[in-house]
Image (cartoon, rainbow, N blue to C red):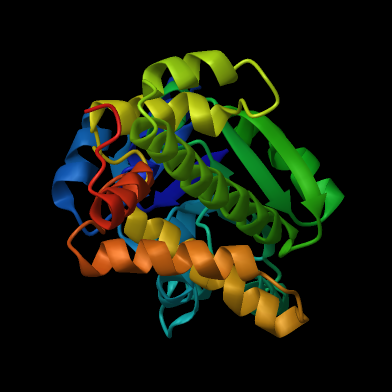
Length: 293
């Protein structure tokens, strides 16, 4: 099975390396030549997008948002124009599920199957190959590709037909964002009340409030570490997609809208490239309290 991967950013690059470790023949493409060179040094072959479409059995994308996926796949002369009937497209980007369905409809006319398979876990889990995949598409297509996705992730779950993967990812991103905001608020309260936030974290992480989000982000807030594992600007993109989808289907997302405003404030104040745990900076600005310091 020959695999092509387009998109070698923070997530795509380590995911490509894990495919190579699993023994897959891999062709790669990215606008950043340094990223391409690094993955080629690990065993991949550099290729144009047209070459990937023409020669690969499975085309993977890991791109920022819906417009980029549509540009790569659907523009005249794009990858879809070069794919053979019977080949497969797996979009691992986090995009609007409405866009996933639109892309799948175009590909179906060309005899190309599609899965939408966004991931959760950020850069650390992309590096160690323990991402969680949320997949939408036909059961038989999913069954054929589960081992491929398992080379990059510890959890691979089919959630329904095309679009279900990205709907699940939007639900994931809502929960993560709201948890991070609640955590920042709670640790700010502790600091303001004269209680050590580190001790609060130690005391509550094993109880009902404990979560993977808390374990990952509380130490970062306390240390003042905002090195991105997942950038604020990317979370803004995901929550915009969630709100757009909600407006389309008639769902109410008031908490999502609130945390989105906080993230947007951070973007406007120079923190868009910081880790989303930098929500704590919003509370620092509003209260003058620096968590852990």
